[in-house]
Length: 291
Image (cartoon, rainbow, N blue to C red):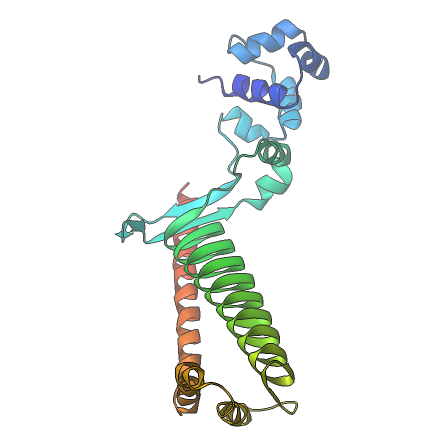
């Protein structure tokens, strides 16, 4: 026997700054009895075990089977790609975290220990995720999608990246309700080139536009109207800016294939994430059933 109970009792007592006598009073036993349990020299009866399980906020099953609470479910692919697991998934066990082992989870956080590890793989899915393609609440990767996301291509409520899209987007190219970047598109935008309902920038196009070179658009403008406004602005800006920024944008947006290429790229990314998530869910389900 590995004295799992004794270790858990000692950890609980130390975390809550209790003496053996104080813990003994809570459990209605002597301090010598608590000392024996912690040393593995004795074992409580079933009624006392129930009290201990309630005190530790751990299920009686986990306590009797001497195993740590399963705070998360994990699947890690054995296949490697660029020295990373092809797929790594870590899903929080909300039942354990919020109910059966709430006290254990809170005490872990109080001691500044990471409660749920980071999923790290080529495709990674988890509360914390890091990889080439990362999906999670906190996501970091080449392409990241999450509530808070960081990456070359990032999307989320708050996103930061070379190309970022989200409610609040910060990046070289920012697309969002509030977008800040060299190129910013959205509702409220700030950037060198800004396009939005309220636009502030060196080149600003919008219903309300402010900057050295600004163009006011009517409401519900379409792509041809935006292109015309940008074309009008190119006559006002210095030659180097026109050649490096304005003319390339006009040539790209004027291409008939541009909208279809953009939509196809977005759909491809959605498909990749959905396929990885579905495959991972099947593997995780299979592992849980076998477990």
